Length: 225
Length: 407
Figure (cartoon, each protein chain N blue to C red):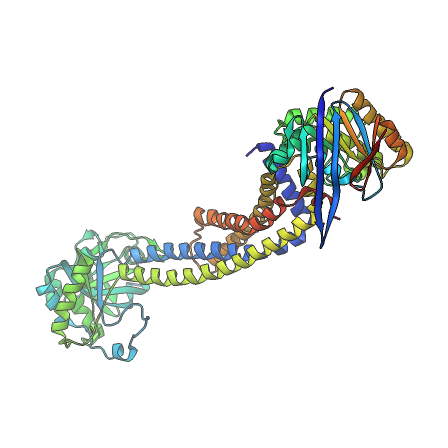
């Protein structure tokens, strides 16, 4: 199997006011290319921190993290930004769309940072929105879309630069179960297309989708199933 | 910089300005005031300079006017009382200058007065009549187009002869040659011996409403006690000035330690004085503009800091989808520059209107140099970069995890 993510003894500590919080305490994790993994655990178990580190928004305080064989811990801000741009697509619980631009513009935003020419940008954004079932909503603004539709736009945005990994943080947290089911089907399809999907969730039906479930507790992996 | 990224930053900046119209406008008030001041002061001074330059051109280049009083009184240490007590300039000074002067070719005394000029039942009011000598046309660069100018004999024998300006001639003699005819100047009969070439208008005033008579004849009207103006055509103004001072101080017996008791006026000196005045005005206004621009800049910085805080999560999202810190910096810097440009643009428009208003009401030519507009935009740009840098750097340095968590 092709190893994509390799973490060894990763620790993360940060200061919250006066107290030092150890969010991760020596975590070993390997995720192969094309896997669909869910990370579950109670709040405070460190799953958000783990997601931030996998997503290169943060770096480990200790231990090593190799992504596609490159040591993330050694990277500077610009290199981290490049990794996020090219390898990772984020799907947030609260969507985090730009309210003042249309759906297709939201999707094309990552491509702007990736220096994709305008024509190609528009083409690809349209195609991506089509693939998540929003071909009729291309020019709608986020506030004209339902929660489920917004999350689809977010997924299309995550796919904009054709990343290796889709990192979803509670992707169905703000949706009813029926809408959430629709979103999960999209993740299934993406997994079948060969993307590596990492879901952070505490919803059972979401976690069940994944072939691998990683249970976190107190900053460590409690067990895997 | 990539065009797509630039356009996106511009779009985002305009969006931010649009959503907070009133806030942006209030923020730019300082810049608006500053740029308006700079633009209108520069434009008004430019217009004034044009006006002065054309007015002075009638005084002639390299023409020195030796007079009892200076044209412009001012500056420190001017003793008005002393100036008031100066002796008149008379023929003695004129003769001394004519005899001993070597740095100038032509000297002429001049007494001017306004008189009515009549011929038959026709009359011209308030003609500017100059009493002078044969050197006058050379100094004033005036040509005679018909007949002749005054001769030394006319002067010596105090003849009642005159040379008419174009306006006077055409009014009094609409369809005949005036040379050889007579006119009445201030009730006295004069024979017309010549016509002056037309000079045209200056600042809406005709320069051809003139008549020239012998200086000696003029004294029949004015008496001999009036102070003269002695005009000199100098080759080198400074050299001539020195020589004139040297001669006149001796003729007028000015003591070694005393100041000149006469004034040597010229267009050049007047221009210099005017320039000094405008420079002082300029510095004051630039100071005012500078203060309002700095105040405006602080306003910009303040509002940009607010904007960065308000959009912390947006910054987090942008970073998550791959924006580099430098790109966030660029985006916010551009936003601050855009806000300043809006202010600068409004300032330029206001400055333009204000200058137009001043030029219409004050009869000053409208002169708004292109570089003043560029300066307005330049100021806005510099303020935008300078005061926008700190907030933009703050935005760029945000930690993506914390920015995403920000509520």
